[in-house]
Length: 155
Length: 322
Image 1 (cartoon, rainbow over the protein chains, first blue to last red):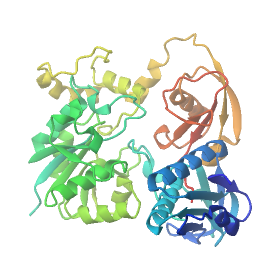
Image 2 (image 1 turned 180 degrees about the vertical axis):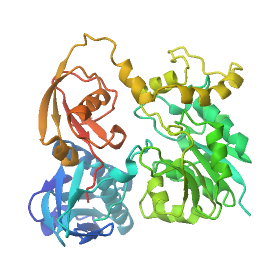
Image 3 (image 1 turned 90 degrees about the vertical axis):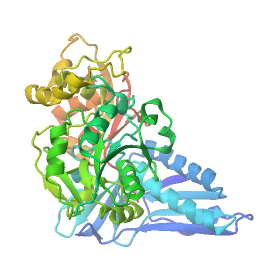
């Protein structure tokens, strides 16, 4: 399967994991991002993910390729959901197989961090109050300085 | 007793949209890095410049005492954090090198109103009332908090100050901290400061005109119209510009504000910068270009790239995957 892909239906973790199997691998690390029920003080009821897919595929693949080269792991895959997700659903999955555990953890971490910061994916939060909002940096970047804007917003 | 005040000019940025090093731009007859360094030296016990490891030997930067980023790539907060760690007992007056309207009065006002009991003393932005982290005094107590903030994956110094007990001061001059990121803004700022525009051959050496330059900015800033206004006028020239057809796709917040996912426009805009300004006049886009990235034909691109007929353009709001 492709290094980076999107899914509009529930992620099939077992299948992706099988894809990473390799006789030379001594281990496998994975990360699952779940939809949680709160963010920055607001109660969240569900999320909607949207992507600029043409560019997201390229950038996602670049990230996975970078991670494989940088940490010397055997294989890595990242799959991201798009569409509407409820609390507790799996939004993003990263898996890495490698000879030893240290580089598997490091590559896994690298991929999820870079995906969050670089891949054109957006999420809209729907709140208990009935309001909704795009998770972004509107407030703190308003008339900001030129720093590549990178923020952690959870999820 | 308050900690000794050291100065730091942030000069480690990528200057991607300017397409040339912002530290060497000359608004006052010499590189802005020199200018800012000298202003800081007047109010600080010691002054340094912040650089990324790969910038240490660059001609513009090699002549200054340097503090090297320990986490390059994290943006300005890496420079702030490196300074706080390098001299942990000092307080730091941090200044970005892309603030052409900065004056010694602005710095003196900040120093005079400093509250060493707070994490920081900063100005409140004249645009949105939020703290301006890149012309601010960061106290030694900020060191641990900044490190912890970065370790949690966060990098926005402004957001750090929003959530701190920083003392915020009103700006004596509303646009003293307007920053410059693009060639257009540079031209406008230069004009506002009554400096000739730089040509390819412009002279970056000191030429001994420092004295007259140093008294000019406050006066010029008070007399001139805003840079945005000037930038708008500048584009009025060359009236009979050719137009091109572009396809624009919208995602997320911009899709909602435009009320559509895509449109085709005939435009005389030559670059994404000009195109976005044009679209802002038609759609209620609240995000400024400094908050966006731009893609041309599904590849990240520069804001000054020449647009061609048939290109597909996407303006990318701050992303939030994961």
